[in-house]
Amino acid sequence: MIQVAVFSSDVRLEEALRAGGLKVGRMDVDSLNGHARATSPPAALVVDVRGQHHLPTGLAAFRKQHPATGIILVASTLEPHLMLEAMRAGVTECLQDPVTPQSLDQAVRRLLVDAMPEQIGQVVAFVGAKGGVGTTTLAVNTAATLGRTVSGDVLLIDLHMGHGDAALFLGVEPRFSVVDALENVHRMDDAFFRSVVEKTKAGIDLLGSSDRLSQSAADPQRVRALLDFAIRKYRFVMLDVPRSDVAVLDSLETASSIVVVTTQELPSLRSAGRLAHAMRTRYGAAHVKAVVNRFDKRADIAHADVERVVGVSVKHVIPSDYRMAIEALNVGRPVALEKGPLADSLRAFAGDLGGVVKQARPQPAGMLGRLAFRRA
Ligand SMILES: Nc1ncnc2c1ncn2[C@@H]1O[C@H](COP(=O)(O)OP(=O)(O)O)[C@@H](O)[C@H]1O
Ligand SMILES: [Mg+2]
Image 1 (spheres, rainbow, N blue to C red):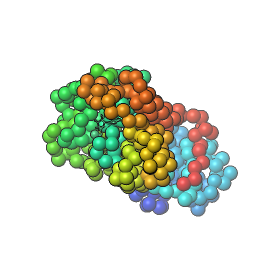
Image 2: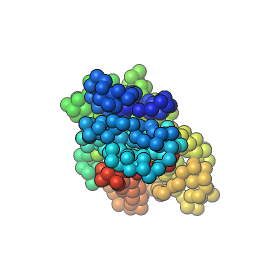
Image 3: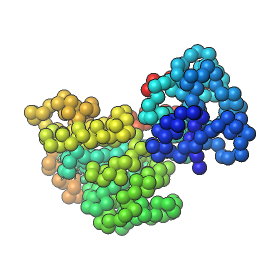
Image 4: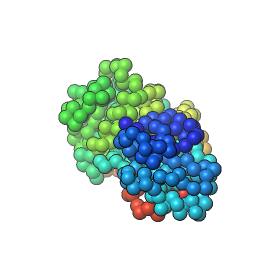
């Protein structure tokens, strides 16, 4: 099934969307006017009017016939008379040239999310600059904190194919794992999904890591399919991402936030810089965040230095508390559910992330509100 149809003589638009993993088809004058063989309408239609002064005839009629299809206009300039035509034809969003693959992809995804009838949850991915910086700690505690507000609506997926330890932090020993889910992702249904996730005392569901290696686990398409399934079931999906797993790092299009976790140590900062750069290039700067764990304000490397090296503003720093962290791990209860500065800081971070996440999903507004004029 085609998700996005493109009405343009510029094949780069199609290619850009396809490269982002969307199912793209071309629309020609005949199909726009309803003369071609009827197929199910796309969720989004991109109409390229660069170099033209009017909308293609038939667009308004198409929109009337397919009210659920969102329309994105790509224009050279936002001339008033063209905008007026756009408004009358029911265009949802206008992009002004120069349009980057990224701005186009983002505009289309916004439409697709709005068009989804079901609940669509938010994915937050945690990636560590190095091992031991606290990635699992942050993923687990963010999940547990959000789980307190939206009980039963948070899933944590430990994407480490071997030796992941999110289960340990939550005091459970799951019988099934993320590998079972990935291997069966193409015949996934609610019953099967329920049988592979583990309920935890912290009030969140866990898809734990596996000790078993599997070929299918390294397939980005399967990871994407798993995330697509999960966001229809949960309000929040937290990912504990192995930083060296290329397939997983390449499958994070649905993530509203990718959180790079670092400490103030040089090797960790250097690799946080590289990682953040790669993630920004791949998914757009707006989606990449950084957090400093075990922050020490007396350290030589200060908050501003971290921001400079990582290239991302750092809104949250998490203090160090060795005793609390170890105790939490020993009893298998996330530290954010306890008291103290570390717990407070973890909760503030999670709350902020949850809040940001909510804003990233605007409610469909009226026509004029939706007609956003964005420059690439
Ligand atoms: N803010 C912190 N203060 C003290 N210890 C911490 C803190 N964050 C994590 N730890 C501890 O550091 C160790 C490594 O954390 P973990 O989350 O497993 O790192 P990663 O997933 O990046 O390898 C664990 O023992 C954890 O309890
Ligand atoms: Mg870990």
